[in-house]
Image (cartoon, rainbow, N blue to C red; front, side, top):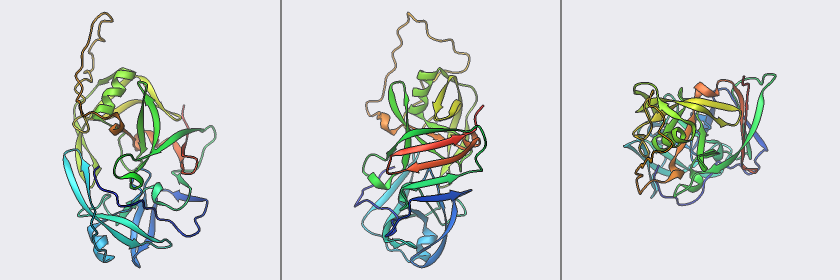
Length: 297
């Protein structure tokens, strides 16, 4: 994602309450410039609200000087930004795009865009025997700054990797370089042919399933199957095919790396396939932690 930041933004009420409860699908009614909107509080979304162009038209939003370019693989979605009055909040910066980020909704916003210091997503009632694990939280780097998403951090191969929580998409996905790193650290191999899946704005990208010989832990979850976005953010060419024997321990293997490669761009997105056993997800912005509670065998 590319863009230029004029200043930080958050949907901040004058007297924010301590915690915001977000049940179920997270869909809420809100008024933007007094116009009723239906949007979703989404743990995978940006802190800056994303609206559809139709919603912006109804709210009579005026474009400012900043344009956002949202990259989904090689496809770029261009959006405008401007100021809007959101119900119960000061004037805030919002962005709108010619197509909706999520079908059937006027917009989405991430937990970092809410006034509350703690945002609790409740997917289902907690069950006896659940494990709760606290992970460090980090924001978006680069020019988007406080407009970006909130991530958990794990370590893969001795280096940090950002993890986002995306219960509104069916598959757990890694970008290409993230998939390569996971394959190297946990013995990953491609085990099936390519398929396509929607990432955002209705844009689908090619994915291949990868099986890990050793599970990677994300909080209480142990992941052994991950989809790799083979052509997005780097290259997955170094991931071996299923049945490929491991390299001889006395063999020297040389793998070239793109000089432009930046490990901070690597992403692992946990989809509904692995989040189903989980009941709650809590973003604590003051403590800079993310708590995940799941019933795991």
